[in-house]
Structure formats: structure tokens, C-alpha cells
Length: 160
Image (cartoon, rainbow, N blue to C red; front, side, top):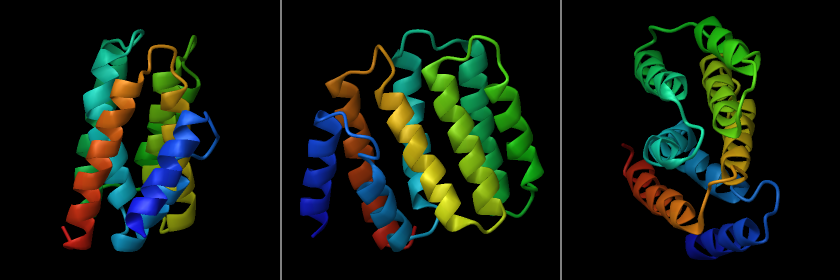
């Protein structure tokens, strides 16, 4: 079942379909709530530094998201904190696709903190859609994301 779902997601990615990651996000969330945000963060941490137009501010937002997600797991972050950063990224003049994707991940975190799991998963899916449309995104980077998916699915199934 999992392998056919991943095969379908890869085919959708190759066909440049919108919501290509939806089955992956859904399966991660079913295995463990929040696992899709873990997957997307791990993917972005590996991918963003390689993309053209990624600047120091974008990397700072990425690092801030990781820190905020870790603090949110401890109950130390209100939903307003990631929502505020999401708005700041969205209003950034000249926002690029990587920044738009980060906006979606911050929105996903805000939704997760509010207990809105479905909306959080939708925002993760949108972030994954945006990042694969970045002009310097490549099939090699997609392979990294898919490898990270396998790692995170295994962890989620083990309850980690």
C-alpha cells in the first residue's frame, strides 16, 4: 500500500501535478500527527541551501521554524508566533518561491498549534507544491525529499 502510494506521488510529481505530495502528507499524518511537518522541515533544511535565490534571511526563517516547532512540541509557543512570522514572510517585497513555501510551513505550524490538523496538512502540502516549482529545483532534490519521506515514515510508524 505505502509503496503504491509513493509511486503515485512520484508520478504526480513527474507530471508537475498540483498536490503531488498529498498522499505522502496524509500517510505521514495518519502514522503520527505532525510527521508531515517534520518531513517538510528535514527536506527544506537539505534543499533550501542549494536553491538559487536562497539568502541569509530565508535560511534564518528556516532555522527559526525548526526552533519554533521544537518549542511548540513543549507547549512553549502560541499560534500567534508562527502566524506573525508567516505574515512577515508573505509581506516580504520580492518574495521568492522558497520564502513562499516557508510562509506555508509557518502557517502549518500555527494551524497545528491551534489543533487544526487538516489545515496544517494542507499547508504542508502547499509548501511542497511551491518548492518543487522553484526555478532551480531538480529531480535530484526531489529524490532527497523522497528519501527523507521514507526516513520520516519509518520514524512515525515507530512512534518517534
